[in-house]
Image (cartoon, rainbow, N blue to C red; front, side, top):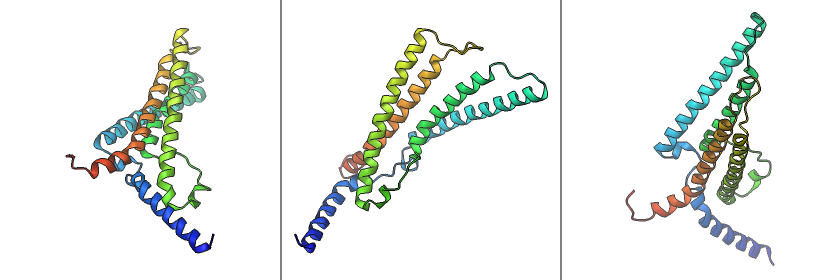
Length: 198
């Protein structure tokens, strides 16, 4: 096969793929181009995340001050720190999904052609949705196990099942948010070209 024929075939394939997957690149994967409801959800989750983080900071300062200044550390501070830290991580997960600010390593993918990038982003969002769904399901099963034997912390006797259920629900919310971003470009392309009222 000659070089010019190969280039023409490559050009046609690229045009077809480009026209097919520009639908996937129509909408950005972030909350700034999203609806008001997502903005409200982002604010509520961000405020909840901030309150828990501030409580974690205050607890740590009080524990360290009590330990070194008054020789009286807070009872159960380690347990509360663990619970608050888990809550911060899982409350932040939906916010990360809304902002599409996952940690990525793009050593290879930046070298892909530009017309592949929307498809790659769409496939990554789909895979992320599936992984988050499995994690949420397994966390719910684990929370049920903890609830069945009334698992509590050692010194303060705080129940652990509600924390595990919170982790499962926030992970499910993150999966739903990511699923929204999977289908948003497709719905946008379908309904923006139709005559349906917006």
